[in-house]
Image (cartoon, rainbow, N blue to C red):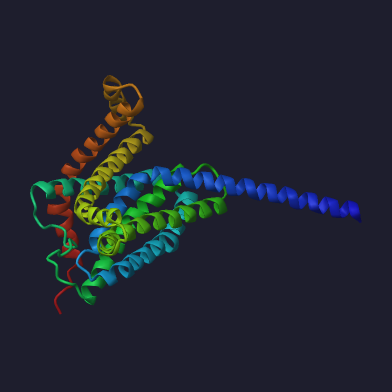
Length: 318
């Protein structure tokens, strides 16, 4: 009897060790996948605050929560099952899908660069920042637009996460992708909530701080926020171009076209050998590739794809 009990306990201990190892594997895979998606995370956090501009202060956090819930729904209900099906039935499609997303990121990044030099009001979702408090209908429209934008970025995040997962069981892949989805959403929209409320926090500290240092810190936050938002816009654009260019270069290499990536490494090797300067030169050249590709895609989207999409969306006359 006692020997049977000991054997059972030994089996339980063995199962616990296997479970612990599996948890460690999932945690490691999730961390790796999240790291690979860092550029998109930065861009997502940089893009999201603009959807909240113009609303009353008490509506800012509820709007962020609505967008975050939509993001979780995008990832867990739609993108995660699609990624698992894709990985099981057609893994060869992952690279082309990633490259299509890379093209989109290059297009968005290049258009933002063009917009900064030649404002043309192309983005219909650009917020009205004239100081007016926006209403419920505009809130609903803005939330819907934000969730649609998030869907594209989330699709890229999930595809990148899937592409770096090693051979593992379907359960491990599902749990890893769910961890990545929840963790990245919490990180992005936690940062967004902090950004959009930072000026209110600064005002509160400036008016109610007990010490002169605290009040000065609050005033500093208020003064710094416009510069922070501008910096986030620049960082987000750079991240789009860097990630988009990198996806395209690695995708071409995966498809057997090694020339572009080899040329990038050759040029980088002449500039610097490893270290910070090596990383900076490679990142700059990759972002430049993304910018050039994006500039080539912009007229195709604006003058060909967008008019065709508009024509298909147009309802026929009754």
